[in-house]
Image 1 (cartoon, helix red, strand yellow):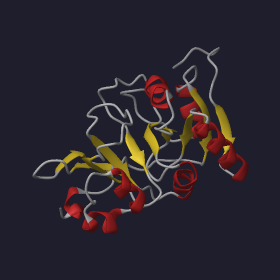
Image 2 (cartoon, one colour; image 1 turned 180 degrees about the vertical axis):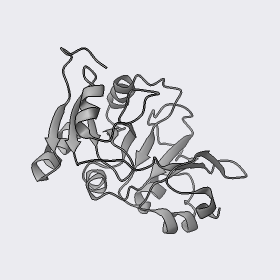
Image 3 (cartoon, helix red, strand yellow; image 1 turned 90 degrees about the vertical axis):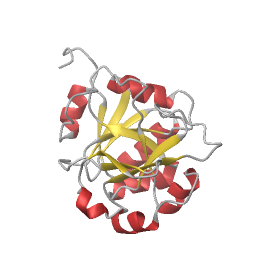
Length: 206
């Protein structure tokens, strides 16, 4: 728990005014907390210089652990990947809690941590998160917690846990108590489930 004098991120109601404030903050390279259908996340625009560094700093996360990218739609995801995403997985599970790790486009130089040749992509099943992606473009995201700690279910608890960090604001969208997304690595000859989550392995039918 941070010391009581540490400044907490601004808590902002997830209404239209809050949405506009989040868009402005993201476009300024700030770290924004947002609700999703899984857990609260922290987000930045990955193409803005220094934004991803602030995201890693906010969590205390080592740069060797990559962050995923949320997109508004499958078309945007395909524009970032080296090859078309598997239509069977996308059509069944997007929008939804499935992150696909694929080879990224050769000229995509975003530093997302980890392997610079790959990218984890997800289209969220959450109206606000989708609207933010549509407004500012793909957003680099990670769960809204200190590295290695559980993600709190409420915006207020997230703000308390991340007091004194580089998080500028958190959109309060109520409780987020879903399971994290399932992460599947599609970069090898055989798909590998890197993290079990909301989509069961038996439902993937890879």
